Structure formats: structure tokens, C-alpha cells
Amino acid sequence: MELKDESILVVGAGITGLSLAYWLTQQGKHVILVEAAAQAGGVMATHYKEGFEINEGPVSCASTPLIEQLANELNLTVEYPTTASSKRFIYSQNKMHHVSPLTLLAGSLLSVRGKIALFRDLFCKAYNEPQQDESIASFARRHFGEEAHQKLLAPVIGGIYAGDTEKLSMQYCLPKLREITRKHGSLLKGFRKEDVKGNRKIISFEGGLVRLIHALEQNIKQLIRYNAKVISFSKDDQGYRVTIRQGEHHTTGSFSKIYFTVPAYALADIIKPVNETLSQQLLKVNYAPVTQWYLTADKTQVDGFGFLVPPADGLPLLGAINLSGIFPAKAPSGKSLFVVFTNSSAQAQSEKILADELSRATGARQVRCIHSRTWPRAIPQPHVGHANLFKHISHFEEQHPGIRCLGNFISGVSVGDCVAAAYWAAHQK
Image 1: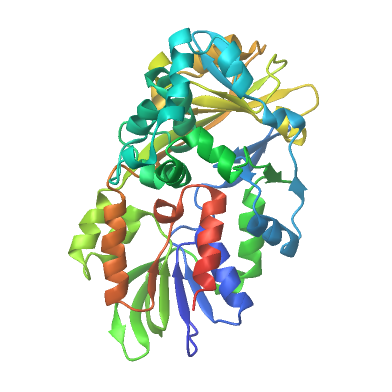
Image 2: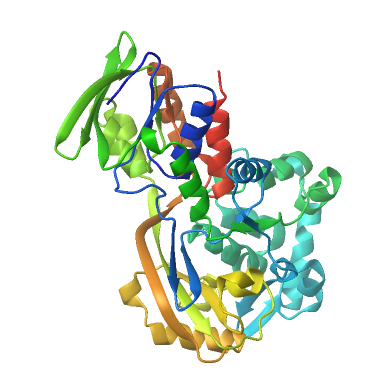
């Protein structure tokens, strides 16, 4: 392993690590990127079956200036969605409900009492907002009532985190909403006063989001060491002395900086010999299991992004994305392709059960599953009190100048969050 003065080590070749290494090299830094797996990208992958494009991991992302910048610099072909992407649905009590301010008040998703409770938010006062962290469920009940919590916010959060609103942290998961209510009291009034925009534009790439991974990887391929793990690290005169195992070989070298971009449980193993306390805190970060199913159909009555399911309805799926409806090129002409999510193992669900449920919800015909993939530890769950972990991480970084801990359990779970965290870390003095 060739090392030069001021070498920087990046640990983990997911979207955070790859984009971080890319931006560091753009500044002329000498970087080594180590990845424990045989390939980069974490959960992201693309396969093709029967003319359908199968995107494992995220199938789209919110368009941000940084992602658009990367796409331009790396010559990626951006796929923009159809106008159907702006239509979102909740599937509840065997009925599809279009979600918009008007339909919430005029539609049948919420009862009359549930609709009246929505206006409870208008009477919330800033000085009554709790200073301490609270669950998303607690916040939702106080501002919009239990029914809106169960039928609106719980399915939305389930679609993002595959988690439980009774446990998930408002401070971490929805920091912007918390900030608005602590300033204005009412979320609805705060949106109007601060001119908060609605849904951001989503995009994909020709060949799936994994194309971003491949383009970054190709740009810095000579710097990546696959099947490589950090075995130990300690301070030395140059910064940090690090031992890396790659296959059967061990290499030791000095680095001026180390960026850890791995999951919490992987970071816990690496730093355990150095800081047992932080290691134990990292192991407390739960990860939700997720199974991603790809179901095809001949026809569907759903014209929109997809639908989410309230957990209280007890259906076997969290929701579904109408992938061919928003990105037609990802399916053969005349065919429909849905991505269905469940938060249980692939073995625990029957393909027929999911196909029947999707057919019932969407009116789709000839539904069948052509691919599935399970991740036992897919999405980090920032429970109430998650901010306490940051205190331990900050203390660790203060004790170890030149070390930074990143990753989606810190930055946020979206692709945009990870890319933004990598950018700011790379450009921080």
C-alpha cells in the first residue's frame, strides 16, 4: 500500500465514503479507501430480468444541488419522473386515498373527528413545545391527534425508516419540523411564515442510482482496497498508525486523518479496543430489517408515485412504489413494475400473499414476483435519546483530532443526506 505525506484513510465505500474520497481527491489529497466487502455501494445494485430494471436499495432520491453537481461532473444520465410522481396515496381499509390538503378534508381517510383534530395544531404555542427529545408519535398526537398520527404520519415514517413512531426520535428524524414548532408553535403557521416548500423533485439515473456508485468508484478506483478491514489504529507522530488486513495480508501505515463511514455496529468493532464506552453506545443503535420485492403486472389502476400502509391496518406490506409509473424506461412497454417493502424476512412472507394484496390495492392484473432481497440490518433506527450518541462521538473526536465519524446513522438515511455530509466533511478545515 503506497503511502505519501498527509495520506488520508476513508473507511467504508458506501455512498458517503465514495463521495467523500472523490471530493478529497479533487482537492489533491492522497486518499486510501478501504471496503470490507468485495464491491462498493453497500445495498445498491442493479439487475435486469425479463426486460425489467431491478434496483436494489433506494430506487430514487430527492434532487439536491450536490447530487445534480455530481451527476454533471460524472456524466450521468439523469432520469426525471413523470408528473404521476406528485400523486401520493395511503391505502387503508381496502381503499386507496389520495393525499393532499384538499382530499384530507374532503376525503374519507380521516373521520370527522380526525379532521377536526388536524386544526389542533393551530392552537399549539411555542412555549409549550418540550425542550427535551420526544417520540414522533408524541409530537403527532399533540399537534394533529391520534387518528392523523396512525393514518398519516405513521405510514410516512414507516416508508422512510421502516420503524416505530413510538420509539423514533423527533429531534433526529424530523429536525426541521421540530425547529419550526419550537419557533412558531403551530407547524401549519410556521410553514406559511417560513414559506416551506412541499415535496422536492425526485430523480433516478439511467441504470439506477447504483450508476452514481459506479461512476464515483471508477473515478477513484486505483485508491480503493476491497476485502480490506481496519484491524487496529493508534496515535503516532504523523497522526494515526493503522493496521489493515486485506485477505491474508496485513499492512501498517500512517495517516494524517481517518474518516469512518461504516454502519454503527461495524464502527463499534473497530473502536472497541480504543474506546469501550463509545463502542457500547454504538451497539445500541438498532437497525430495521427490510425486504424489497419486485412485482410485475399487466395493468394497474394506480396513477401515482405509489402508496403507504398504516401499520395499524395490519397488512403484510409497508407500501409500494409504482416504479414504471414514475420512470417508464425501467419496465417494458405495457407492463407495470412495483417495488414492495416489508419489514420482515423474505421467508416470513408469501409471494402470493403480497401479489394478492397488491392486486387488491391497485387493480393490477397478473401480478407476480420476479425478485426479492432481504437486508437483516437495513435502516438505522434513531430512537428517542439518539442525540446522546452524538455527545459520545464528539468526545471521542475531541480526544482523537483528525478522526471523523460519518455514516447514515449520523447524517440521516437519505442519499442526499449522505452526500451532503461527505461534502461538508471533505471541505471542512
